[in-house]
Image (cartoon, rainbow, N blue to C red; front, side, top):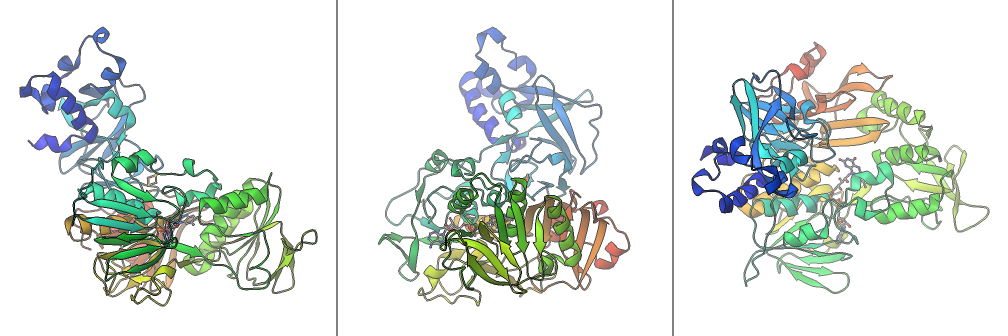
Length: 601
Ligand SMILES: Cc1cc2nc3c(=O)[nH]c(=O)nc-3n(C[C@H](O)[C@H](O)[C@H](O)COP(=O)(O)OP(=O)(O)OC[C@H]3O[C@@H](n4cnc5c(N)ncnc54)[C@H](O)[C@@H]3O)c2cc1C
Ligand code: FES
């Protein structure tokens, strides 16, 4: 029956409750689940069961006459605080949970596409409008989805109070893996963003074999992106999923387990402590290793930190004590800028040393880089741009600790601690003797399915993977390595899709975000650079859209305080429907460009 497709997980599990308690002729039939059926006298049922009872609820709406592509947020009558977004696609009305399951962005401000996706305005998570299922990172949970009916000019949804209040549901990834001889066994090396995408993707796509994760870190996958924005030292507060979730999914985690080498021919993985694991497929997602500086003092003095994991945050926080410290951050990278902003707001005296004229100038251009600089200066961060570093100098009180950073021009910046934000290198040391040929930057070359070139049954995703780029400006042979949270997780999902179903990849446009006083949102990529920037908006107020162009192609878009422009551009890029540079210059507003159903890449 057609309408069963619309039953969200939570409702279908409640439908199984209905199977035992109502005559079989009304199973799964929302039309029959009228309020009269659901109105079991209150005293006879527990509060919990009331919450779980599936019934019809009226939406508080004056006008339910939506056009295709329109959406409206509506309160649900009788459910305190309950809301949905009602939207229309291909003449069908749908009702979904109103907030993105990542950080809770209001989806009413998101972008709806003709092929049935709603894309979050903040960081690009995409949900299927039929089922509410997650389709693209960074969110992990699905949206609740409810069947809609119209009666006498009013809209009704069918669902339980609990499902409406939650607005979201966990993917059903529970699994008792098949362990018989010869059964599939996927080993994932790394426990970060790529690993999360691969794990959830495998189980969501029905993979029934064993999944083993080997990770150097001592904790389950965390939201790494929060580390530099808030210096949270507690991994429990950063974990995406708890141990029970992975147990239910039949995922065997080996924490504090560093892989030292892989024999791809024998399908064997070896760990630093002498462990050995066999696999039928391996997914490599070991991320990046922060670079350090080779200059005098930087290798031996204490008080100089990098920032990649919770341990780094704990070390930095210990050095900060009660704050009020002099901190020198070397590198005006995203991580350097974010951590500086966070430290300044905690009451530290922060100076960023950068080699470019403006922060992030190479990627974002000088004018946009200056916007970021202004934003951070408002938080009290000081800048030394166009500056090189000569050495780290010991403190007068303790010759083993850093006390200052000497710049090339002779200026000495006092420092209680130093944080390095000078980039990362692909963490592929363990592959050096494995027989696969690494790229010049030590990354792993993969094909469109994220399969490692030159060996069988191996995939690589995330910061270590150089993959064929499908976004605007690509000529089909363009390769790219991108250090974005979403890219790693989406690529992990792609590898999982191929392992579980042998399906063709579904391409995604890279999306990135950063907290630089205001929220920066970015989509696309510039593997071949850009030759111009079309800047719209008010740079003084950090309210802008920057279109990065190469010839007539808009290859990347950055925005601040201009939602949902980035999301709209990502959806247009995905279909190769992005307006040209001339059209943007002539005043075409991308929000007025229809995002049609066809996906051409
Ligand atoms: C502080 C910080 C803030 C960031 N903020 C943002 C942001 O706001 N937006 C954004 O888009 N991106 C951001 N990024 C980038 C983003 O986090 C990365 O691109 C993403 O995590 C890459 O995912 P990954 O799976 O490739 O690697 P990771 O998430 O780094 O995971 C790698 C995993 O592999 C493990 N590992 C490494 N070597 C071995 C080995 N030999 N054996 C076993 N395990 C190993 C690591 O311990 C780790 O568990 C940020 C990164 C950092 C460090
Ligand atoms: S809040 Fe929706 S993607 Fe982050």
